[in-house]
View 1 (cartoon, rainbow, N blue to C red):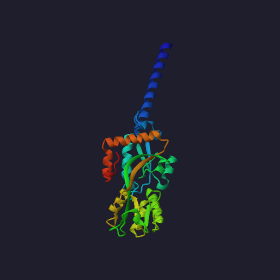
View 2: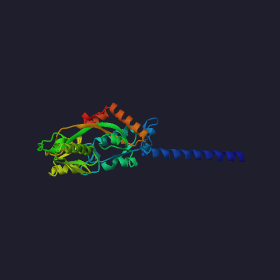
View 3: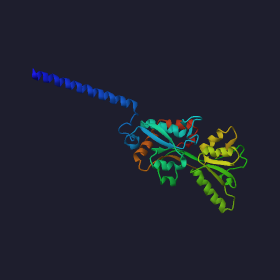
View 4: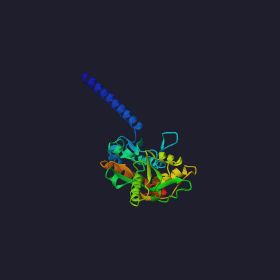
Length: 288
């Protein structure tokens, strides 16, 4: 009788343990359902430490339409970089968090890990390559935005001699203007009066109100600004020193770089990359 009672107690204990284990498994399954889907085991994304939390944090100066900008009256980011980042995140099995960051300090913010990558219409240059790594994704050159009819007859950067030009700080166009002024000074010609601004729309506003003769920026941005000006502004139509935009990645984020490269290759293969570029009228900038 004692042995039988002991056996009954043992069976009851085992049943309770099984129920506890089942409840724990059910609880864990619920947690997984509300969490972000992790990258599949064996993929390049699965080895990237930055993606273990299920989030790809993207730093961007969201004021450079059509590459990245906020929908008017909202804080909803839009643009080529936004769409491409979301598409890459889908491939990687994570979600995206966009972090608005001033362009002049965005590389430093990446270095101190404020975000995982940067996507901000950043041209790949030798100087920047010394600081961070890049994954190229779009070719773009420099163009000049002028008043309708191009009253100053501007056809090149050198034609800006003696004129007032607006430009966003820390962009490659600042360097181009500095180089042009060096040449103009050597030739005893009037230098360009350069006005720098934190964001490109502020420079465009100076052109609109007549305080600047031109704005110099990336060709896709100049085209977009002209399109949105109700015919008051126009693009000169240049594509100076065309070079790739790059997704910026810390030099020690080797697994993440491989994951981003892999995701872009998949987007090219399935046609999504071409579709996104076409949606923003940027097919000519495609990188194979």
